[in-house]
Structure formats: C-alpha cells, structure tokens
Length: 244
Image 1 (cartoon, rainbow, N blue to C red):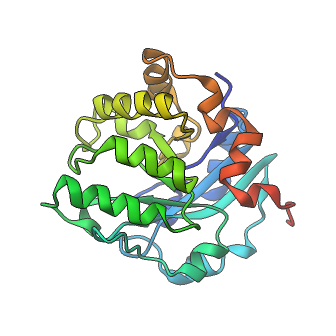
Image 2 (tube, rainbow, N blue to C red):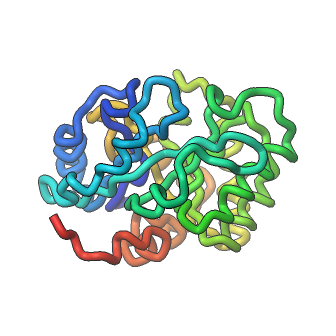
C-alpha cells in the first residue's frame, strides 16, 4: 500500500506531543506523503493550546518541504448530545476537523446507546470530516449504526495506528477495528488512516493499520488515504489552491 496522506497527527502545541511543525513536515516528506494533517487537541483537553491558536492558523504556510499541510483540530466530543469544544465558525475556518471521544473531556460511565448517539450527533455537523479512533472499547458503541451514519453524512471513519500500539490505553481496539472494517466492506463506507503521531518519527506510520487491513482483506479502493481523488471528496479544503 502506498499511503499519500496522514489525516491525524499532533505537534508540541497539543501539550503532550514533542515535535514542531517543521519536524513533522520533514518526516512526512521522508515517508513520501503528499498530505499531512496537523490536528491539535482542542481547548478542553488538559494542557493543550487555546482558542487563539486555532484562530491564527492562516499564518502557517500550507506547503512545507513538498508536503501539503492541513491545519486543523481534533475536537473533543463532550457529551452524548454531540457537543464539541470549538465553535462552528472556528471549525469552518480550519482545513480539517477530526472529532474524538477522550476520557478527560467526555467522562466515564456512559451507556452504549449514549456513546453511539454522541458519534451520530457529531457526524451530523457538516464541518466534521473524520471520527477519530472509534475503536476504543472503553466507550462501547453500535458499530453498525456508526458505519451507516458515516455513509449518510459523508464522514470518514478513522483507522488509528496509535490505538493498536501495545502501550495504548484504549481497550479492545483490534477487535473493534476489525468489526468496523467488516461493516465498512458490507456497506461500502470509506475509511481514513491516522497515525495519531505525537512525535515526528511516527508521522505517516501505518504499520499496525496495514496488518489489520490485510487481516480482513479490506478493499484498497475504500481507503481514502490511498487515493487523492477519494480523499478530496471528504476533505473539501484539498480542492482549494495552496495560497502559501
């Protein structure tokens, strides 16, 4: 597989990541990527950057070291109603928006029905491009509802390479990812790949994801990060010219 894009990564601006924009771009270029999304944690994540960071991203050159940068956010889904921690106007001005459930922001103890509703309501927001790491078994969901809603709303579901690390705090990730992929095959729903890199060496690293894709014989034509034309359908900012 020849991946052309990584749709989820972090720089030191996220507070618990360790590399600069320049370092991340250099690693992406080294791995032969055409596109790298830098999706910093939104303001409710402890230790991350504030609102002004996201409102000032127009100063960042979008082409660096031959790699197109998508400057965006990984917003936090805050509750079962799908509320997130960046206002709509700010999200619409970003190149890409990944929406995820994180324990410090969403909390514990929600039911499968509540978790599923949280994702469904979030996917109804037209400025949300991707659901990040929906594989975390700490937040059980109905994967058939998730996949069907992704198809209805034109939202990409993420295969998160970091989720599959042995050190990951997420639970049941491999089994959940395989369940989701089988349903994506059944309903012909495209997926994306995110390294969720928090250090430059992991940018564009999809080693774990590739093993899961091979295990379930997932069709390459449904992997958006292998096909720029497909990726553009889900990330409209890629259709705009690079200004800087």
